[in-house]
Length: 238
Image (cartoon, rainbow, N blue to C red; front, side, top):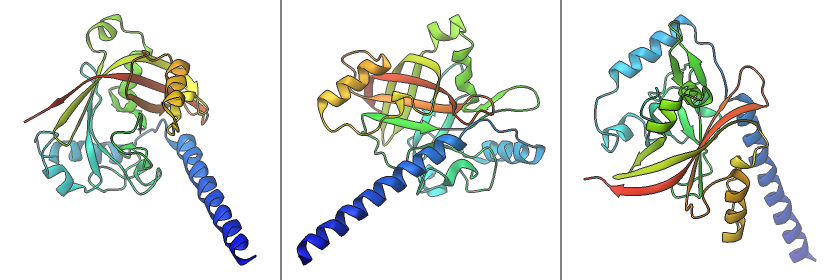
């Protein structure tokens, strides 16, 4: 009887943890989105960009500045060119900059439940514009929503740099969607589950890893814009 009670308690705890994880994710998906930075936020953002040392994304100095640093994301031809962090949850970096200052622009951050070799690397960020209309943070993803033919032809590669490795992902999808999009799936119990995932999102059949970049559309908490890429190469950088 005691053993059965312990098993029931263990099952209850596991369900509670699962519910909390789902709730945290939905909270994140409902909050990450468009922000309207005030002058003070923009000034702080520009100071940080100017103060961050001009080192290689592979340099250990980034972890000295912020131990949560996991890599760097860049899409040539856009304004997406930022360090990526992974916090203690999916809320911490909604209003905290890379250098640890409070700022409504937050930081670009990876889902805290993931490792770098996860099959679907989900990365979140706010979208914003400055007073001149320049897209900031993941506002740069909207270059792809504008269907810029030259951009799509010449700058369709997402670069993610981490631990001495340069990973290149070829963009295969840029779409308006919602928080229930299958592109947010991060758990795959079997190879077949991942194969079905690739089919649902329209990825190339031989894809081994997907990167999913997500931000909001307007002020609608349920609407999303996501850009997804399929891994095409991983190169060691010396």
